[in-house]
Amino acid sequence: MHESLPFVLALIALIVLIEMLANKIKVAYPILLVIAGLGISFIPGLPAIRINPNMIFFIFLPPLLFEAAWSISLKDLKKWYRIIGSFAFLVVFFTAVSVAIFANYFIPGFSLALGFLLGGIVSPPDAVSTGAILKFVKVQKSVASILEGESLLNDATSLIIFRFAMVAVATDQFIWKDAVFSFSWMVFGGALVGLALAWIFMQAHKRLPTDAPSDIAFTLIEPYILYWAGEHLHSSGVLAVVFGGLYLSNHRLVFLNSTSRIRGYSVWESFVFILNGLVFMLIGLDMPEILSGLKEKGIPLSTAIQYGVWVTTLLIVVRIISSFFALFATYLFRRDTFNRMNREGMWKRPFVLGWTGMRGVVSLAAALAIPVQLSNGQDFPQRNLILFITFVVIVLTLLVQGLTLPYILKRTSAFMNFEEDSDKVSKRIRKELYTHSVNVLRNQYAEYLVRKPLLADMLKQWENKMQIVDDEIMDLEQRRIYLELLEHQRNFLINRNKDPDLDEEVIRSQLYLIDLEEEKIKSM
Image 1: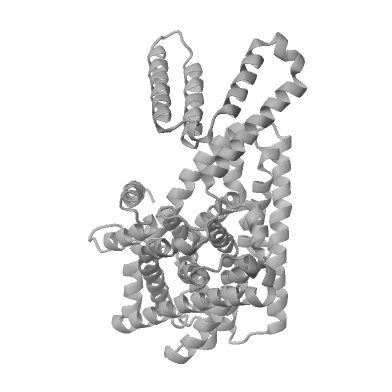
Image 2: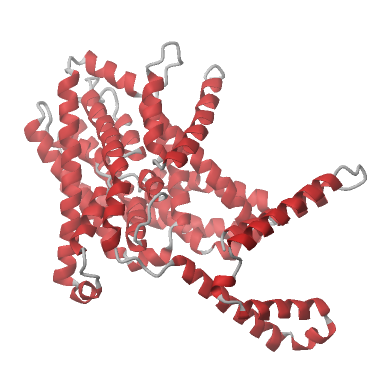
């Protein structure tokens, strides 16, 4: 393993450089990572990368889902639960059925069970790719919330379909009664396991004498425990992680102090970035192994590419049709909601939602999880072709949809009916916060204002902030000067730290406070 370590470290460094390039040229970094991995895979002399599906399922997937659950707004989930549930469950199932029927009729050697297996693999869109693309364009908040919520749940649906299809292929039979019971336990059992363990984790954070490092360490192992427990009890480990993450996220102010939250955010942001980067790089690096598998089975490359293009086209069309059907269903069954919607360009929004169907991490892991041989010793049917089709779907959706989505979003932005400008909302909330602070000081601490000059001075600062016009709150020139002043403070502290008798921890603490102040100014 130590022989591959330099190569892995070089990959991580390359991921960082590619992310910098992606930000500069305004392209989602997963797209460039897949292309880079594909290019690197054909360089002679490099170590062969063989991807263990258990590595992706257990090492990569739990923390990625956990972080997504912490980031999403539970309020938005509740607000858009109907359409999120439709896309995460019904649309994924409809997509898997469509792929199964297509494969059974048009791809030689594909039974209906194998078609469902392929459908379960390629049906869930990837949240990371969409999120990376949405960084560069303005999108309606409701659309972003729907995409984030869908991505949390669709992985579980697709993996459940995948699991049942695997059983059908291996046993050549499908018992609906057992399937319904197993499906119910996987969904509800996974949710119950996640919520129960999350409550235990919260109590541990509250009752144990934890500090920021131990809190962060606990949060790093929690998604793995959630996933392992869910899978060990034959429920959905994915749903256990999602529901556990949502519960902990909604109670973070109860069991984590401000220091743990601030430091944990930075740790998790870096950790998830590296995991995402490695997974997308591995997608490209796995290409030689997939091609060798096709060659062993005597499947022409041109034929395999043709099948991949057909399946990709079907996936895109089915998702767009589903998006329009969701709007039509809103018109039929939720007429009050439909009447409140902006009618201008209404039929362009479902197309935008339908175009955000890039595939990625889960599809790759599921395809690689197909065993080489069945339990009876025979080769698993069509394994290499399924792997190649999955790879083509991932690459094409990333390149075609990923590269064109920013253009489509910009073209349709005039019809997206954006909510109130977030800057205006922030300024309004900030002034409300100032008013609240002044009222608290005057009503609850009036006697201290006379005896405590610092409190009186603080009251005067809040009152001054209440009088400032929105446009006068730290304009660009003032912000520049203030940030420069903070840099002067840093330099002063660095020079003071040259004093051998001065405790460096004091200097570091002050530098950290300056960093927090700079972050606050940048967010204004």
